[in-house]
Amino acid sequence: IRFVEGINLELTKAEKRTYLIKFCALEALNGAAQCAYSIFILLFLRSRGLGDFQSGLVVSLNALASVAGRYLFSYLSDRTRRPKAVLLGLAVLEVLLAAPFLADLPITALIACSALYHLVAQSLPSMIDSWFFKTCYGFEEKFSIPMLFNVITVTIFGALNGLMADHL
Image 1: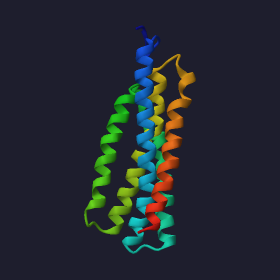
Image 2: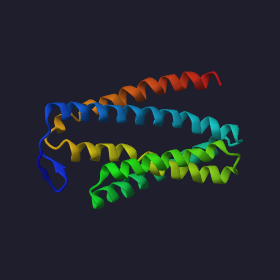
Image 3: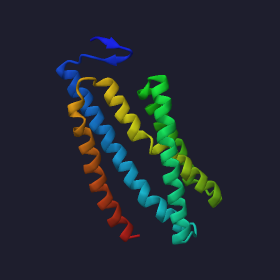
């Protein structure tokens, strides 16, 4: 296997298949997590006494944090040239930032945690994509396959989460 500045130029067919399976799994898991959180946060905020307008403001704050996070962590990934390390670090942070929702914290602290969670969690797709392109140089035509797994998962889990929300 030849490398140029940390980029893999030649992969065997078995390696390509292995990476493709990994990236499909990562995209599917990421899509499922995004769907689950989208439904959860609205129901959670309502259970904590926030109205529709206030919940909408929190969702807007989360979207703003998402934009900032994608820029920040993409920049970090590009500067370090280690998208896999950035991705793994973000995954750990995502779990840690989800933990405060289990505690009985003031709503302002939970809103801040929600924004930080989005800063991190919404950066994961960019890191998965960056890792794919760095790892699978010359294999980019297969990029649509992992993305398809993300779309399928988002579609299925979005529908399932909507059905569960109706029953709560």
